[in-house]
Image (cartoon, rainbow, N blue to C red; front, side, top):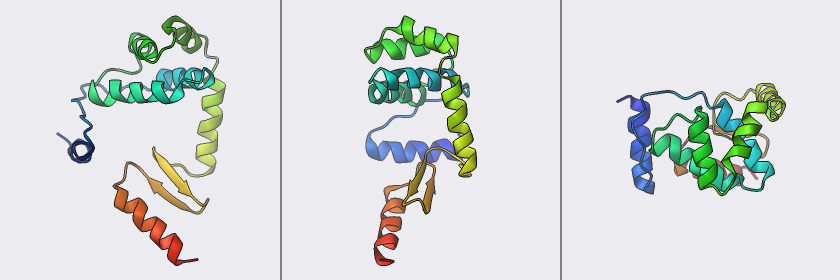
Length: 141
């Protein structure tokens, strides 16, 4: 097991999150397009949570339309509509624009947290990293 997954499992265990064993690194583009559909449908948070569970806990291939359809259904959406949105590419331009914006601000990883347009925390970091940053900001006032 790589150091990345060991660290991820250790952090997840403290929060009651189980990370599965991944055999495939998914191309998440279709899942991202489906999440934009969910956003427009007002169902983003639940879809996002279920997609993360499918990928990180169940170790499913979230680039597979069948997996996306199952996650959509679990999230209260009509899977056929979500899959059609992915197939017809209606959210590609939105994702391309988001990628361009990320490049303009030198985004190097996800998640990235930008605080006060000045401080950046990249990656899934322990809560102490955030606490330290907020304390630093508070002291500099």
